Image 1 (cartoon, helix red, strand yellow):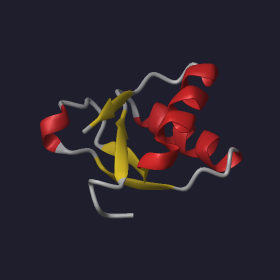
Image 2 (cartoon, rainbow, N blue to C red; image 1 turned 180 degrees about the vertical axis):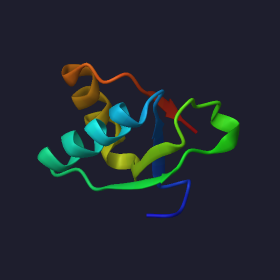
Image 3 (cartoon, rainbow, N blue to C red; image 1 turned 90 degrees about the horizontal axis):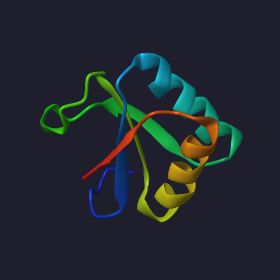
Image 4 (tube, rainbow, N blue to C red; image 1 turned 90 degrees about the vertical axis):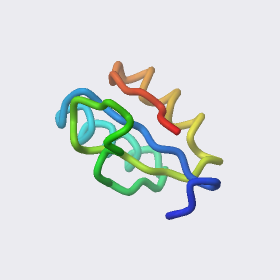
Length: 74
């Protein structure tokens, strides 16, 4: 899951939101990888989640349902 053409990155303002998002992804069986937030993303938190672009919309909806604050980057 390393090619930017096939992946999407979610950034967060707090590590709490990043780890919560990782849990939500696991509960929904959406594969994610915890990565360092890209410096150019301007994220306040150093953690980010990378997932398959094909599952990104599903994950974005899940975060919104749960009330997780995030930005989809890239």
